[in-house]
Length: 189
Image 1: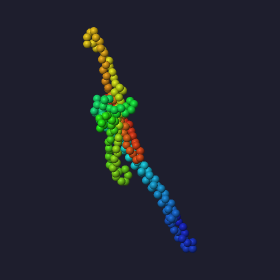
Image 2: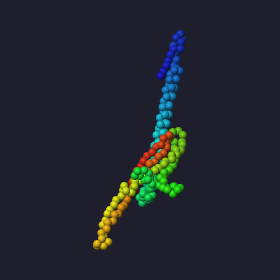
Image 3: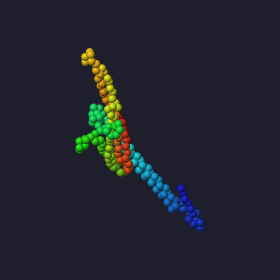
Image 4: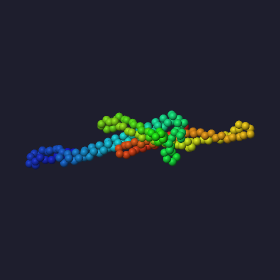
């Protein structure tokens, strides 16, 4: 934008070109608003990145727990090794100081080094996981057989077999001033 004006009408026609103070102040104000908008956008992007990174870590923790319990095998997840956590659900148990079984909360900490934004930083998140397991009766197959030890006696024998267990892993973590959570399910056969 070119602003031109005459210096003095009595002098020769010399023109003065340039920006006035008003134009410069308006341009500075517009640039200031644009800068603030970009800073706000960058802050929102950083928060979204950290939230996604926290959620990915929670998914990893849940999947690692399911894989670990699957490697132990279904025989380790019998109703006797679990404790009730409400109606129709069981959870992993640990032995308390008084010798009773209490629900076990697994705490896992993950750490990321990164640079979301200008300043490099370290993000540490503490995840708390609770594993619920389906009771034995949900995946139970029973077969009844008749056999005779003597020709005069016939007996019936029932064989029961638990062929699978469903695991629900609920992982909680803090982000900003709220608690985030996810639940991942899996089946161990």
